[in-house]
Image 1 (cartoon, rainbow, N blue to C red):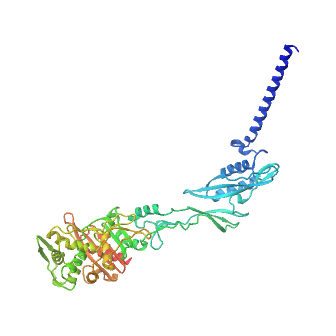
Image 2: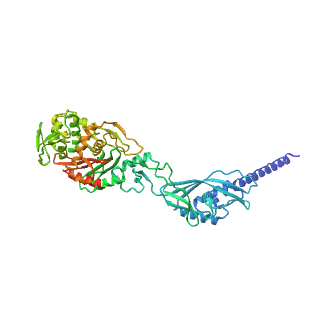
Image 3: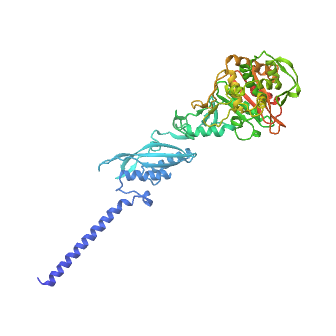
Length: 533
């Protein structure tokens, strides 16, 4: 064969090989692109005999999320679209997101299979309902499609049933001792001065507000069959406070009805806080819990306690009550200069004789009043979760004059309304009292105390009862068996004074403090209103 002929044969053979390769590549490209025609984009609305059950399920779920199943791979697109549209409307337009789960491997000759998927409906307020669903797939005219049933929307839905949504009944985040809402739920303005503290503790301790809606399956008549979402879990319980909505409302109503700054703190004699109320005129800082004020004659509870232990007197001892008296370099006067002459210590206490108690204080050791104040809780220090508190500050006197002033609750003696209520609770129960705001969250005691001897407290109680029957708080005679002490304490330049009433009735101890009232009688009136409420 000639060289030229050989070259021609080789060239022809080479061209044939190239043609075969090109044809193979074109065939591979066509085969590779065929499944992609049923993928994303416009392909979602097309069907192909080559789609696997997983591809069909995935395409169906994408259209399910969009809310339109008219072009979905399903055996009854019209019924599916109608049911899905009705569900979305019933769920108030909640958005849905699905994701494909497990799809079993299917033999080539199989005519049915299934797939699992995950569903998440998101409602206003970001409440999310999650569950797992299941799709049944069948081969129809050689193509895989989803078999439609209401169970596609939710596995528990049966023919004739549908979903229904309703708001969750508001649950309290913080409840009072009786289960009434303090934060969340139907709480409306309860304990305004404590709202920040209550909410802060709740956000750190509680499990949250939970679902904002409930979803139920209902029958054809609309009757609920089962709640599928929104039921409170056992762990979704509110924090429980020691406060009482009834006591708090009574205290708040009393202070809100007063023209000037007013504060009331009430607690069980066991220490459980019942009410902490102050009006708008008192400001938005919790003065009720940590504001320190001169207690005036309300401090005579401590002065009497000290005198009964250290001054060699009893409640029946005869003491002088002149209208005015110079003690050291201090001249003390009784209110309006009243003069009782010689009376029992109990009577002097009930009438609030400054001259009597200034003299008794001056005869005590330098630390005598501080010791009695400590026994009544005024120098104690506590950490109540969520609250910043201060009971008081009563230190040993630096001079005789200072001690005389302290004996009538002036000078450097400082007490908070919380501390005053604590003092009354200690007298009532005869034991050291630890203030509490929570059931289940303990108060930390940084500095505790021991109560005065029972024999001393028995006499102090008798003296406090006398105040409310014949003394400066006799206006409380109609309020039951009240024990207490009034007080008027000058501040600043001395031109103005705060008014106090500190006492207890039954197992409730309380303190009323009115800034700038210049008299204790309005405090007694507020005490009566609180007790009546």
